[in-house]
Length: 425
Ligand code: GLC
Image 1 (cartoon, rainbow, N blue to C red):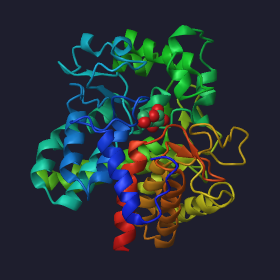
Image 2 (tube, helix red, strand yellow):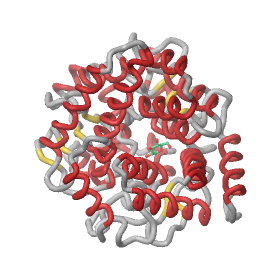
Image 3 (cartoon, rainbow, N blue to C red):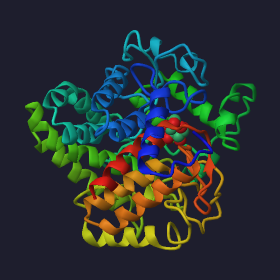
Image 4 (cartoon, helix red, strand yellow):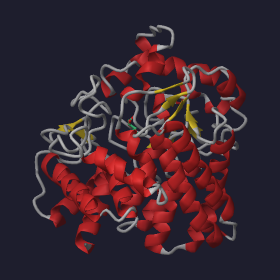
C-alpha cells in the first residue's frame, strides 16, 4: 500500500479493505503482518469499531475470538495466540496453559489491555441493531468489569491499576519511565531479540522481568496488591473503562440485566479520577511511589470519553489539547506526549508520534461533548495522515511522515469509520 497515495475516498477505502483482508486470519485480524502475527486485545476492539459499519459480521467474529481467550477470573488477555507463528514473548514465556484460570485449548498472554470491548460492542449494536450478539457477549463483558473492579483496584480507591506498560496500549509512554527506573537493573540481553526491532530504545529487559515476576507468582491478585513493583492508575485506561461502563449500562437491559450497577460503577470511576488524577490536567498515579507522574501525555485526555465529565473540566482539557502543548503546535494531531516535555521525541513510539487510535478516541470524545469543530479537525487531519503516508503504525506529528510498521490494521479499520462519517456529515 505504501507509496501509492489514495487520492479519493473510494480508493482510500479500497486500500483499507485490502489491508484488512490481508491481515485477516479467518477468526481475527493481526495488527500487522510479520511484526504482530497474533491477536491483540486493544487492536481487536479498535478494529471491531472500525469494521462496524462496513463489515459488522467480521467485527463480531473478531470480538468473539478474542473472548475465547478470556480467563475464568474475567481477565481478557492482551494477546491471544491463534497460530504457532513465532513471536517474542510468546506462549512459552506466558505459560497460560499451566494456569488453572486460563482457557483450555487457547494460548494467551497473562496481562490485560485497555477495556474498550464493551464500548466496541455498544458501537456494533448501535450500527447493526443486533440484540442477539449483545446477549451473547454480555456475561463475558460483565465478568471483565468485575475483574477490573476487584483484582485491579490495587489503590483501593475505585480505579483499575495497570501492572505492566504493555497493559496501557501505550507501551513506551514516558508516563512509565519513573516506575521503570525504580526497578532493579536487569540484563537478559539475548531474550530481547524481537522486542528491540519493534520498539528500539525501550527498556525491554525490565518489561520482560516484570512479566516473568507476575507469571512466577501465578498471576495472583494478592501478589499484585502486595508485592508487584509496578502499579499505576492511568487516566486513559480508566477513561476507557468508564466509557465501557456507560456502554454496559445501556446494553444491560438488552441482555435482560440491570443497568444500575454499571451506571454506579461509572459514577465511582468519575469521582475517583477527579479525586486522584486531576490537577488541572489528568496525570497517571504511581501507586508504588505514591506520586502522580509529572509528564502530561495523550493519556490525559482519556477521561474526555466520559459523557458526564463536568463541563468546566471538558473545557480545560480541550484547551490543553488544542494548545501549543499538544495539537496546537504540531501539523498533525495528536502528539502522544506534550511537546514541551524533555521526554518528547517525534520519532519514538508513544513518546511523540500521533496514532490513528488515540485520534479516533479523541474524535469520539469530541462528538460525545458536542464539539463538532474539534471532531471535524480530528477526522480531516487523520484522513490526511493515512492518505499521504499510508496505513502506518504511527506518524511524525510535525511533518506527517509514517513511522513504525506498514499496513497496520487499526489505522486501516478506523479509516473506514472516519470515511463513513465524513460521508454522513
Ligand atoms: C504496540 C502498541 C499496542 C498495540 C500493539 C499491537 O505494542 O503499543 O498498543 O496493541 O503494538 O499493535
